Amino acid sequence: MLKLTNLSKCYTTGEVQTTAIDNISLEVNEGEFVAITGPSGCGKSTLLNVLGLLDLPDSGDYELNGESIGRPNEMRLNTLRRGRIGFIFQSFNLIEELTVFENVELALEYSGVPRAERRTRVTAMLERLGLDHRATHRPSQLSGGQQQRVAIARALVSRPSVLLADEPTGNLDSAHGEEVMALLKKINQEGTTLVMVTHSPSRRSRQADAFPCSTARLSATPCGSQPPNSPDRLLHGCDSGPCPPCACGLAAGCAYWSLNSRIIRHET
Image (cartoon, rainbow, N blue to C red):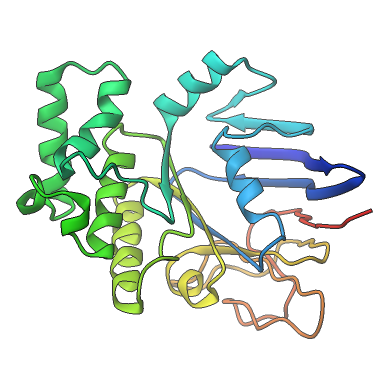
């Protein structure tokens, strides 16, 4: 479904060059729930932006649903994003002047979905996420967990093939964070491919396949067979000291399935 091959992205500010992601190759298969973890500056959000077509790589190839993205113009990017990718952000990004129903409906309105179909799909989505009784409320009348559920509903209502979540629990307390993570896991179990960025090892270890990254170069090779209820693939990399053991119980530096990943950050 998502395939990156030898992909790199750099940013230049004045005389300072930052390599956000360096020659990374990985695949996310249909139906997987993948978490990308690591400290600030290791390239997590840049990688998610590239996956979501919010940014383009400097080199390498990105395939989405078997189609090479290449160097599309803005119109093509908008078409690809609108039809295939859903986004969930840490800050919710809800419009206070709109009701819950209207916030979710907005995604369909921009896609040109007829009004009658919009209302049917939004109503069904709010019921699915337990928000139907909040349809006429404003975002400020909701808890943080409820606001994030609205954001998830807005991302899902367009029926994307993949859902990208950038620190979806970052602004939530522990209880609401667990609630949102349980919801994301349920959505994944119902068939939606999900890629999440998080700095929290506890969040990813219980809910998703994990690719921890650090400021060190990372690489991985296939390891043993997948144990029950564990991540499909796991990558550890630490720039100082030992990494925690991975879900398969083997030493740090292993990965399920196939992954050859290097995520680094440096300044010159």
